[in-house]
Length: 302
Ligand SMILES: C[S@@+](CC[C@H](N)C(=O)[O-])C[C@H]1O[C@@H](n2cnc3c(N)ncnc32)[C@H](O)[C@@H]1O
Image (cartoon, rainbow, N blue to C red):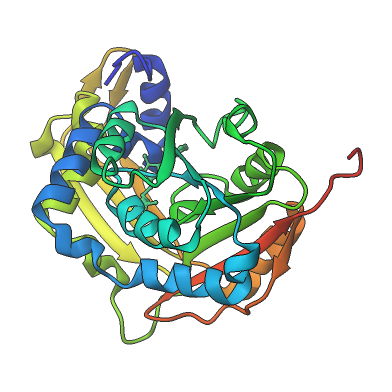
Protein backbone atom coordinates (compact mmCIF):
# COMPACT_ATOMS: atom_id res chain seq x y z
CA UNK A 1 0.00 0.00 0.00
CA UNK A 2 1.93 3.09 1.15
CA UNK A 3 -0.38 4.99 -1.21
CA UNK A 4 -0.02 8.33 0.55
CA UNK A 5 -3.22 7.80 2.54
CA UNK A 6 -1.65 5.05 4.65
CA UNK A 7 2.11 5.14 5.07
CA UNK A 8 3.98 1.81 4.91
CA UNK A 9 5.05 2.13 8.54
CA UNK A 10 1.44 2.27 9.76
CA UNK A 11 0.47 -0.84 7.78
CA UNK A 12 3.62 -2.68 8.83
CA UNK A 13 2.93 -1.92 12.50
CA UNK A 14 -0.56 -3.43 12.12
CA UNK A 15 0.80 -6.51 10.33
CA UNK A 16 3.36 -7.11 13.07
CA UNK A 17 0.60 -6.80 15.66
CA UNK A 18 -1.43 -9.43 13.79
CA UNK A 19 -4.44 -7.22 12.97
CA UNK A 20 -5.33 -5.26 9.85
CA UNK A 21 -8.51 -3.20 10.37
CA UNK A 22 -11.26 -3.81 7.80
CA UNK A 23 -11.21 -0.17 6.66
CA UNK A 24 -8.03 -0.95 4.67
CA UNK A 25 -10.16 -3.20 2.43
CA UNK A 26 -11.78 -0.09 1.00
CA UNK A 27 -8.72 2.02 0.25
CA UNK A 28 -6.09 1.96 -2.50
CA UNK A 29 -6.73 -0.86 -4.98
CA UNK A 30 -9.53 -2.17 -2.70
CA UNK A 31 -11.84 0.62 -3.85
CA UNK A 32 -11.60 -0.58 -7.47
CA UNK A 33 -12.41 -4.14 -6.35
CA UNK A 34 -15.56 -2.89 -4.57
CA UNK A 35 -16.62 -0.82 -7.57
CA UNK A 36 -16.08 -3.83 -9.87
CA UNK A 37 -17.94 -6.12 -7.46
CA UNK A 38 -21.00 -3.85 -7.64
CA UNK A 39 -20.96 -4.04 -11.46
CA UNK A 40 -20.49 -7.80 -11.61
CA UNK A 41 -22.63 -8.99 -8.72
CA UNK A 42 -25.47 -6.44 -8.52
CA UNK A 43 -27.85 -9.18 -7.24
CA UNK A 44 -25.84 -9.31 -4.00
CA UNK A 45 -27.33 -5.92 -3.15
CA UNK A 46 -30.95 -6.97 -3.65
CA UNK A 47 -31.04 -8.56 -0.20
CA UNK A 48 -34.13 -6.81 1.22
CA UNK A 49 -32.03 -4.80 3.66
CA UNK A 50 -33.05 -1.41 2.26
CA UNK A 51 -36.76 -2.30 2.50
CA UNK A 52 -36.16 -3.23 6.12
CA UNK A 53 -34.43 0.11 6.83
CA UNK A 54 -37.15 2.18 5.18
CA UNK A 55 -39.88 0.19 6.92
CA UNK A 56 -38.34 0.94 10.34
CA UNK A 57 -37.96 4.64 9.43
CA UNK A 58 -41.57 4.77 8.28
CA UNK A 59 -42.83 3.11 11.46
CA UNK A 60 -40.48 5.02 13.79
CA UNK A 61 -40.67 8.52 12.33
CA UNK A 62 -43.33 8.57 9.65
CA UNK A 63 -43.24 11.12 6.84
CA UNK A 64 -43.95 14.04 9.17
CA UNK A 65 -40.86 13.52 11.35
CA UNK A 66 -38.46 12.18 8.72
CA UNK A 67 -35.64 14.75 8.42
CA UNK A 68 -35.16 16.30 4.99
CA UNK A 69 -31.38 15.95 5.41
CA UNK A 70 -29.69 12.57 5.44
CA UNK A 71 -26.04 11.87 6.12
CA UNK A 72 -25.07 8.38 4.97
CA UNK A 73 -21.85 7.19 6.60
CA UNK A 74 -20.06 4.52 4.59
CA UNK A 75 -21.85 5.23 1.30
CA UNK A 76 -19.43 2.89 -0.52
CA UNK A 77 -20.00 2.30 -4.25
CA UNK A 78 -23.42 3.98 -4.07
CA UNK A 79 -25.52 0.91 -4.91
CA UNK A 80 -27.24 0.89 -1.55
CA UNK A 81 -27.43 4.70 -1.64
CA UNK A 82 -29.30 4.46 -4.94
CA UNK A 83 -31.89 2.14 -3.37
CA UNK A 84 -32.23 4.33 -0.29
CA UNK A 85 -32.49 7.64 -2.22
CA UNK A 86 -35.22 6.18 -4.44
CA UNK A 87 -37.34 5.90 -1.28
CA UNK A 88 -36.06 9.08 0.41
CA UNK A 89 -36.80 11.29 -2.61
CA UNK A 90 -40.42 10.07 -2.62
CA UNK A 91 -40.94 11.05 1.02
CA UNK A 92 -40.29 14.76 0.52
CA UNK A 93 -42.31 17.28 -1.43
CA UNK A 94 -39.90 20.09 -0.59
CA UNK A 95 -36.11 20.17 -0.91
CA UNK A 96 -34.22 17.13 0.36
CA UNK A 97 -30.48 16.90 0.93
CA UNK A 98 -27.99 14.01 1.04
CA UNK A 99 -24.40 13.82 2.28
CA UNK A 100 -22.49 10.65 1.40
CA UNK A 101 -19.46 10.10 3.64
CA UNK A 102 -16.76 7.51 3.17
CA UNK A 103 -13.12 6.85 3.83
CA UNK A 104 -12.45 6.33 0.15
CA UNK A 105 -12.42 9.11 -2.44
CA UNK A 106 -12.73 6.55 -5.25
CA UNK A 107 -15.86 5.02 -3.72
CA UNK A 108 -17.36 8.48 -3.20
CA UNK A 109 -16.75 9.28 -6.87
CA UNK A 110 -18.50 6.02 -7.86
CA UNK A 111 -21.42 6.83 -5.54
CA UNK A 112 -21.72 10.34 -6.99
CA UNK A 113 -21.82 8.97 -10.54
CA UNK A 114 -24.35 6.23 -9.73
CA UNK A 115 -26.71 8.67 -7.97
CA UNK A 116 -26.79 11.44 -10.58
CA UNK A 117 -30.32 10.36 -11.63
CA UNK A 118 -31.69 11.45 -8.22
CA UNK A 119 -32.02 15.06 -9.32
CA UNK A 120 -34.73 15.78 -6.69
CA UNK A 121 -32.17 15.36 -3.89
CA UNK A 122 -29.31 17.82 -3.50
CA UNK A 123 -26.22 15.65 -3.11
CA UNK A 124 -22.85 16.24 -1.50
CA UNK A 125 -19.97 13.88 -0.76
CA UNK A 126 -17.16 14.10 1.77
CA UNK A 127 -14.27 11.95 2.98
CA UNK A 128 -13.99 11.12 6.67
CA UNK A 129 -12.47 8.35 8.74
CA UNK A 130 -15.11 7.72 11.39
CA UNK A 131 -12.56 5.79 13.46
CA UNK A 132 -10.24 8.80 13.65
CA UNK A 133 -10.24 11.89 15.84
CA UNK A 134 -11.05 14.20 12.90
CA UNK A 135 -14.38 16.04 13.22
CA UNK A 136 -17.28 14.65 11.19
CA UNK A 137 -18.10 16.68 8.06
CA UNK A 138 -21.77 17.01 9.04
CA UNK A 139 -21.72 20.40 10.75
CA UNK A 140 -20.30 22.34 7.80
CA UNK A 141 -22.83 20.71 5.45
CA UNK A 142 -26.07 20.83 7.41
CA UNK A 143 -28.75 23.49 7.07
CA UNK A 144 -31.28 24.38 9.78
CA UNK A 145 -33.37 21.39 10.87
CA UNK A 146 -32.63 17.87 12.05
CA UNK A 147 -30.38 15.38 10.27
CA UNK A 148 -30.92 11.67 9.84
CA UNK A 149 -27.52 9.99 10.26
CA UNK A 150 -27.41 6.50 8.71
CA UNK A 151 -24.85 3.81 9.39
CA UNK A 152 -26.12 0.85 7.41
CA UNK A 153 -24.85 -2.49 6.18
CA UNK A 154 -23.44 -3.60 9.56
CA UNK A 155 -20.58 -1.17 8.98
CA UNK A 156 -20.41 -0.70 12.78
CA UNK A 157 -19.54 -4.42 12.93
CA UNK A 158 -16.41 -3.87 10.81
CA UNK A 159 -14.74 -1.21 12.93
CA UNK A 160 -12.16 -1.88 15.63
CA UNK A 161 -14.04 0.00 18.36
CA UNK A 162 -17.82 0.42 17.83
CA UNK A 163 -18.28 2.60 20.95
CA UNK A 164 -15.64 5.02 19.72
CA UNK A 165 -17.40 5.33 16.36
CA UNK A 166 -20.79 5.94 18.00
CA UNK A 167 -19.20 8.65 20.15
CA UNK A 168 -17.66 10.22 17.04
CA UNK A 169 -21.09 10.23 15.39
CA UNK A 170 -22.57 11.72 18.56
CA UNK A 171 -20.01 14.54 18.46
CA UNK A 172 -20.75 15.17 14.78
CA UNK A 173 -24.52 15.35 15.36
CA UNK A 174 -26.76 17.83 17.20
CA UNK A 175 -29.48 17.27 19.81
CA UNK A 176 -32.63 16.04 18.08
CA UNK A 177 -30.82 14.33 15.19
CA UNK A 178 -31.73 10.70 14.56
CA UNK A 179 -29.33 7.82 14.05
CA UNK A 180 -30.49 4.83 11.98
CA UNK A 181 -28.24 1.86 12.57
CA UNK A 182 -28.42 -1.32 10.46
CA UNK A 183 -26.78 -4.33 12.12
CA UNK A 184 -26.44 -8.07 11.67
CA UNK A 185 -27.88 -10.13 14.52
CA UNK A 186 -26.16 -13.02 16.31
CA UNK A 187 -25.19 -16.05 14.20
CA UNK A 188 -28.17 -18.38 13.77
CA UNK A 189 -27.70 -22.07 14.61
CA UNK A 190 -28.78 -23.30 11.17
CA UNK A 191 -26.81 -20.67 9.29
CA UNK A 192 -23.10 -20.57 8.42
CA UNK A 193 -22.54 -16.81 8.33
CA UNK A 194 -18.90 -17.18 7.23
CA UNK A 195 -20.01 -19.01 4.05
CA UNK A 196 -21.32 -15.71 2.65
CA UNK A 197 -17.72 -14.47 2.44
CA UNK A 198 -16.23 -17.57 0.81
CA UNK A 199 -16.51 -16.71 -2.90
CA UNK A 200 -13.23 -16.05 -4.76
CA UNK A 201 -14.27 -12.41 -5.39
CA UNK A 202 -14.87 -11.72 -1.68
CA UNK A 203 -11.73 -13.59 -0.61
CA UNK A 204 -9.78 -11.41 -3.05
CA UNK A 205 -11.26 -8.27 -1.43
CA UNK A 206 -10.37 -9.55 2.04
CA UNK A 207 -6.74 -10.39 1.20
CA UNK A 208 -6.33 -7.36 -1.13
CA UNK A 209 -4.81 -5.05 1.52
CA UNK A 210 -2.25 -7.72 2.44
CA UNK A 211 -1.06 -8.28 -1.13
CA UNK A 212 -1.06 -4.50 -1.66
CA UNK A 213 1.22 -4.27 1.38
CA UNK A 214 3.68 -6.62 -0.35
CA UNK A 215 2.74 -10.05 1.06
CA UNK A 216 2.98 -12.59 -1.81
CA UNK A 217 -0.49 -14.09 -2.51
CA UNK A 218 0.91 -17.67 -2.53
CA UNK A 219 2.12 -17.22 1.08
CA UNK A 220 -1.37 -16.41 2.42
CA UNK A 221 -3.78 -19.06 3.73
CA UNK A 222 -7.14 -17.43 4.56
CA UNK A 223 -9.45 -19.00 7.14
CA UNK A 224 -13.00 -17.72 7.63
CA UNK A 225 -14.77 -18.66 10.85
CA UNK A 226 -18.11 -17.94 12.48
CA UNK A 227 -17.71 -17.41 16.21
CA UNK A 228 -20.44 -16.63 18.74
CA UNK A 229 -20.06 -12.91 18.08
CA UNK A 230 -18.49 -12.40 14.67
CA UNK A 231 -17.35 -13.66 11.33
CA UNK A 232 -13.57 -13.50 11.47
CA UNK A 233 -11.08 -13.80 8.62
CA UNK A 234 -7.51 -14.72 9.54
CA UNK A 235 -4.55 -15.14 7.24
CA UNK A 236 -1.74 -17.51 8.20
CA UNK A 237 1.63 -17.05 6.49
CA UNK A 238 2.74 -20.30 4.90
CA UNK A 239 6.30 -18.94 4.43
CA UNK A 240 8.34 -16.17 6.07
CA UNK A 241 7.85 -12.73 4.51
CA UNK A 242 10.26 -9.79 4.60
CA UNK A 243 8.86 -6.29 4.26
CA UNK A 244 10.61 -2.96 4.75
CA UNK A 245 10.80 -2.70 8.54
CA UNK A 246 9.43 -6.17 9.38
CA UNK A 247 10.22 -9.85 9.02
CA UNK A 248 7.12 -11.94 9.57
CA UNK A 249 7.75 -15.63 10.30
CA UNK A 250 5.92 -18.56 8.71
CA UNK A 251 2.87 -19.30 10.88
CA UNK A 252 2.34 -15.61 11.73
CA UNK A 253 -1.39 -14.85 11.77
CA UNK A 254 -3.11 -11.61 10.81
CA UNK A 255 -6.80 -11.03 11.53
CA UNK A 256 -7.71 -9.16 8.36
CA UNK A 257 -11.50 -9.41 8.37
CA UNK A 258 -14.04 -8.84 11.11
CA UNK A 259 -17.80 -8.60 10.89
CA UNK A 260 -19.21 -8.43 14.40
CA UNK A 261 -22.69 -9.69 15.03
CA UNK A 262 -24.86 -7.85 17.56
CA UNK A 263 -27.45 -9.07 19.99
CA UNK A 264 -30.17 -6.35 20.03
CA UNK A 265 -29.79 -5.89 23.81
CA UNK A 266 -26.00 -5.39 23.45
CA UNK A 267 -26.61 -2.84 20.71
CA UNK A 268 -29.11 -1.00 22.96
CA UNK A 269 -26.47 -0.82 25.69
CA UNK A 270 -23.85 0.44 23.27
CA UNK A 271 -26.17 3.24 22.13
CA UNK A 272 -27.08 4.15 25.67
CA UNK A 273 -23.42 4.27 26.75
CA UNK A 274 -22.50 6.58 23.89
CA UNK A 275 -25.21 9.22 24.43
CA UNK A 276 -27.97 7.98 22.12
CA UNK A 277 -31.55 7.45 23.26
CA UNK A 278 -33.14 4.37 21.75
CA UNK A 279 -36.45 5.08 20.00
CA UNK A 280 -39.24 2.74 18.84
CA UNK A 281 -39.90 0.52 17.01
CA UNK A 282 -38.22 -2.30 18.94
CA UNK A 283 -35.58 -4.25 17.03
CA UNK A 284 -37.03 -7.27 15.23
CA UNK A 285 -34.27 -9.20 13.44
CA UNK A 286 -35.40 -10.34 9.98
CA UNK A 287 -33.11 -12.65 8.00
CA UNK A 288 -30.38 -11.93 10.54
CA UNK A 289 -30.62 -8.14 10.13
CA UNK A 290 -32.15 -5.43 12.31
CA UNK A 291 -32.41 -1.66 12.35
CA UNK A 292 -32.38 0.61 15.39
CA UNK A 293 -33.36 4.25 15.65
CA UNK A 294 -31.85 6.49 18.30
CA UNK A 295 -32.08 10.16 19.13
CA UNK A 296 -29.02 12.29 19.77
CA UNK A 297 -29.40 13.58 23.35
CA UNK A 298 -27.85 16.86 24.48
CA UNK A 299 -24.48 16.41 26.18
CA UNK A 300 -24.11 17.92 29.70
CA UNK A 301 -22.47 21.06 28.24
CA UNK A 302 -25.22 21.69 25.64
C1 LIG B 1 -20.05 -2.63 4.52
S1 LIG B 1 -19.89 -1.23 3.48
C2 LIG B 1 -21.53 -0.57 3.66
C3 LIG B 1 -22.04 0.04 2.40
C4 LIG B 1 -23.46 0.59 2.46
N1 LIG B 1 -23.65 1.60 3.50
C5 LIG B 1 -24.49 -0.49 2.62
O1 LIG B 1 -25.30 -0.41 3.55
O2 LIG B 1 -24.52 -1.40 1.79
C6 LIG B 1 -18.90 -0.19 4.51
C7 LIG B 1 -18.49 1.15 3.93
O3 LIG B 1 -17.96 1.94 5.01
C8 LIG B 1 -16.72 2.54 4.65
N2 LIG B 1 -15.87 2.59 5.83
C9 LIG B 1 -15.28 1.55 6.47
N3 LIG B 1 -14.56 1.99 7.50
C10 LIG B 1 -14.68 3.34 7.51
C11 LIG B 1 -14.15 4.37 8.32
N4 LIG B 1 -13.34 4.08 9.33
N5 LIG B 1 -14.53 5.64 8.06
C12 LIG B 1 -15.34 5.94 7.00
N6 LIG B 1 -15.84 5.00 6.17
C13 LIG B 1 -15.52 3.72 6.42
C14 LIG B 1 -16.15 1.65 3.57
O4 LIG B 1 -15.28 2.36 2.73
C15 LIG B 1 -17.39 1.11 2.88
O5 LIG B 1 -17.71 1.93 1.81
